[in-house]
Length: 264
Image: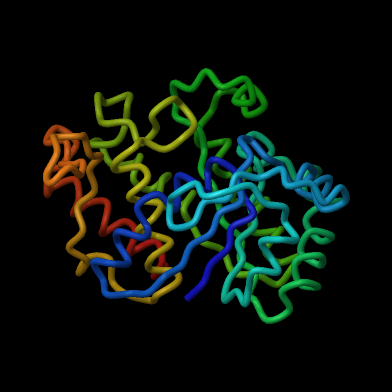
């Protein structure tokens, strides 16, 4: 299965652990991501018009080159192509009105056999200092409801399904273990991007279940960043950072949420 995301740093977050989960599940996924930090639908359309190689291209989580949208689309065939709005604009419908449908139509013109889906992004952390959080009165729930409504409307406008990552993150934050106001672990590393381990894992778990139809609760992969531990036969050896390895209790909660959100 081949998946291309026309995205930004939030698609980088969502895809980070996806290849590892897929390998553990015995699934052959090839995952491409066109990245510009904070890239909005409007800017994507500007890049369509210019044809510029404006994106960092990631393949299976590794940055490999620069690319234009057209170049990536022509590197198909693609099974799925994901679209999303920049995080701050995600709950403001006016930011979709003149850009979403034209982008969808352009993508379909170059990848007619691909299914286009909407990647529902997530609200900021309650403690976020991101300047766009002011647009939602610094209210996490208000931001989530706004973006949820916009993504639903966007999906209806182009006849697409939704990858419900935002719903999964919102649901997880209802658990005291991930509620920062109850001294829980934040699923964000900076107030808006997902945390390196469990936040990114939750998003990838939703993507995995969405695209494969498999039960993430049965997947054995455990996320953790790695560090250089030495050399073996002249080659670097990397080992998981022990403090990064999530406890089973938290992993079970995250997996159950990802599974449940997709079934709801």
